[in-house]
Image 1 (cartoon, rainbow, N blue to C red):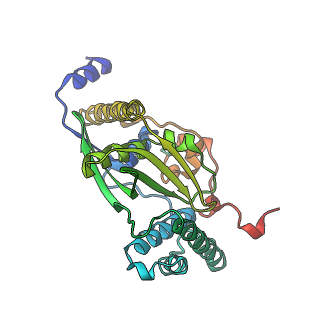
Image 2: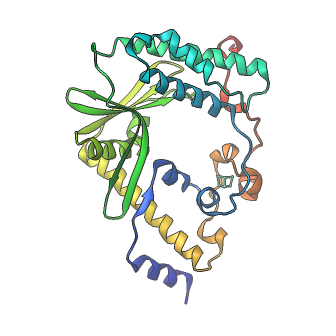
Image 3: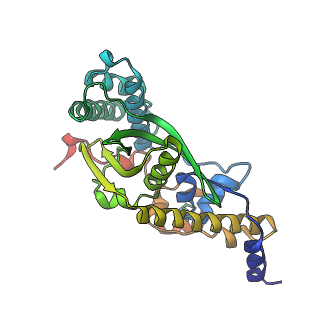
Length: 289
Ligand code: SF4
């Protein structure tokens, strides 16, 4: 029996629901990375922590904790102090670099919360903070945790905090499968219409937004279903004894330099340079020009 025939037979079998999270679906951009992340056991060793992830983690924790404080304690300065309290120096070149970025991240949060104060009517609160939302289709059990879910003019709005150095625009919000799946799942979980998705970029304070239509959400859902089917077929084919590097082939490309499994991947190593763990930080304001 050829591999193609085996694969067609596997596709014809009744399918279980695939437990899909946005990060799981995104990992399949490189099937080998997906396999190493979700299937290989014992789990292969990853590279060390990235400093830019430490920045993102502290900002996300600070903004979530800030929202849970009593209203009278929610000042921008308290938001900045929460960044300092939850700071981890993993991945930085040393203490000086870590402290400089800690203070920059604290200032991002302080300035963001100043802007936020003008966006909220008195007494209004988000519908969810780090809220898990979930839904099902005939083939997918989708779940994920949204940074924040707002309610505006009777509809829900998905808010995702971003701390990367690249600026973002409405095309990024429109193209994000994660945000679309959060919108679909939030509407189902909270029983309220949800079409708007927003990326809140802390380094610039800018908001990139997109208002989905039923059609654009369906397109994302369709793509998620196709990816899930590819994952199911590859997983079943591997379990049936196929070669791991054939059914979960590497997709070397521009993201290999950031991949946690690069050291274990000859194809990815061949197309990328080894990076310092702080390479994703970019420049501090005082270092420019
Ligand atoms: S290094 Fe590149 S090709 Fe290798 S697993 Fe990572 S993303 Fe895939």
